[in-house]
Length: 393
Ligand code: OGA
Ligand code: ZN
Ligand code: ZN
Image 1 (cartoon, rainbow, N blue to C red):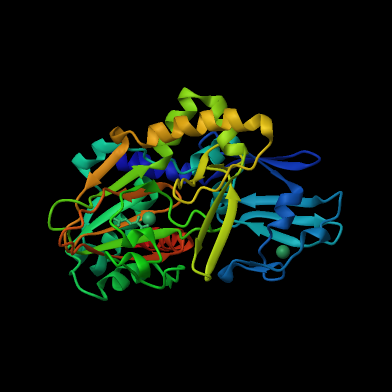
Image 2 (cartoon, rainbow, N blue to C red):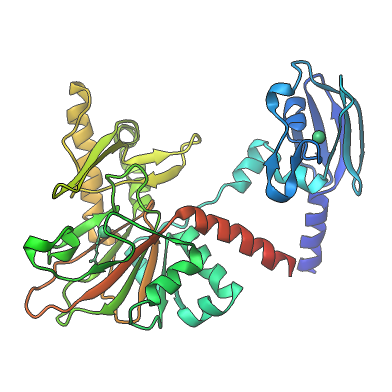
């Protein structure tokens, strides 16, 4: 019964019930009561007939500069099976739009809101219900893989168990998502204690690492990060810490909206140097919002923060806001802290999740994690492909 209702709603959603025209746009009323308004310039620009584009490759060959200023239809015709047909003035070009395509691209406020993805924010309570999957499930089928991708999308993080603790396995897991990208530490980076003189990263020391964005000093830091545990420390030190950066920012936004605005407006510089090989610097706001004010990215790294470089009158208010955020992120109410065990792997979104570790005791230390990265674009590409494939089966 419920299913029938859902199917009916779905089909009403994609059924046009009435079409009206005004001088600039077409007004479509749908069987479910929704109204869409499509400007003529938008409709003409989005014709994907074989002359205007190639839908198979998502390519557009038509160019918007070729739309006349006073574009309007010579005629409009529609039928829910054949679609909406428009013949355009003045050149008589014919376009056909599928009702479902139109509804999926409707730019009314409500449909744009519906299309927005809402992340599930979390704090340390997530430990009681960890997004955790068995590697076998992820490796062997679309459903398991989709679950991993959805955890990454929704929680920004996913844990896998039963990834054999040996060399090469990390790469196999990462490649389920996409090609491994080389970072300035190499393709795969071994996090093991190394002598102070030869280390290029603080990761190879025993230092505690406060939660951070990896490589915040790069214009485009790595997107998806993998840590695979081969050997856990033998004394319970060097525990991993993960923090939902979006949860912190949401708190800050509630507690100090003005401070939040400052951190999304002014850029902080981040810098990394070692030997004569690397001197990287980038300046970006800690909080990156989309045009609607939704959180898009967070970039926090105390380790690589360079001196503030902003107007004199902003220095003190910026520090006030920055310190509030830092107090929030140092509060372990937001920390998921755990000891990764051999065979466990964690994958997370470096644009949202901050990660760190507690200090590693240096006596007889054998801890070994391996690290590599994949671009975020592959996460979203795979999500679209898999969702589409599973919907069709
Ligand atoms: C790093 C890092 C965490 C760890 O290498 O950037 O955060 O658990 N390491 O060693
Ligand atoms: Zn066309
Ligand atoms: Zn790190």
